[in-house]
Structure formats: structure tokens, C-alpha cells
Amino acid sequence: MFNFKKQLLEIQTINGIRDSIIPFLVSYLSQNNNIFYIAKSDLELFQINEFIIENFDNVDVYPIPAWDCLPFDVSSPNFNIISERVKTFTNISVDYGTRNKKNVFLTTINALFIKTAPIDFYKINSISISQKKKTSFNHIRDFFNQYWLYKSSNRKRIS
Image (cartoon, rainbow, N blue to C red):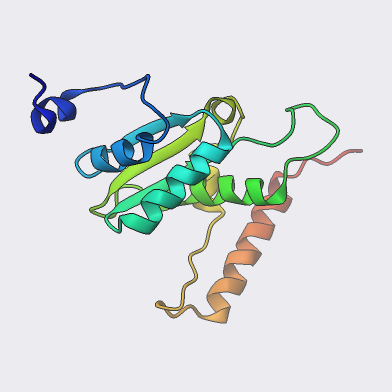
């Protein structure tokens, strides 16, 4: 007989689950483990993301959606998708491991093949501004000045 509480926590990979059970299974497993889930589509990724965010406060969700165009296409990816990816990679590089929450990483097979910037890029080029923490205008100005100097010193000049 299958002992749900004991044997389910020892499983490393799961496949062949019905779509309606996936959000419940991912959220249950995320209570004790960090989860990396590859969704079939961005729609499934979005639905699981919303389900976990709305129902569980003790889990951090990191959605990594795929682009909505081909890699070498004439059109660019949607700005919302780009901003979601940048936000997720920035949160992973800055916040990952600093809280006592469990993590769920959601992505698709297409998103796995999209080249991303190194983790140092997100650490160097991010600033945290929130209502809970006072941030002076001088700090923000200095950050942008430092960023601009970094960008201009690394820019290749064409002669």
C-alpha cells in the first residue's frame, strides 16, 4: 500500500499526472521541498503560478515564461514576458536563499532553451526600492551614475 506522507516525499521526479491535480500536487510538495516544474505551456505555468500565490503565503514562486516568438524572428518578444523573466532572474539572484520559505520554479521546455544573462548581471544591475524601506534620492542617483559609468566603460567603440 502507498504511504502518501512518507513515500511521496522521497520521490525525485513525477510524470503522467492529470492536469487538474498538478497545482495541488506541486503546492503540496512545495511545503517541504524546493520544486522545479516544467509546464506544458505558458498558460499552464500561469495557472499554477496564480494558484500557489493565491493559496500559499509560505512559498516563493519563480515563473520563467518562454518568449512568444521564435529566437531569430523579425519581431521581438512581448515586453511583459521580458519583464517577467528579468524580474524572476533578479529575484532569484538577489533573494534566493535569504528567506525561510520553500521555492517553486516554474518554466516551460521552450523557456529552458532561451539564453539568459549570467547571474552577476542581475546582481550588479538591480536596486531594491520599496515603501517599507527608506531609500534616498542620492542613493538612486548614485546607482544610475555607477550603472552608466559601467555601461560606458564596457561599450565597444567603432572607429
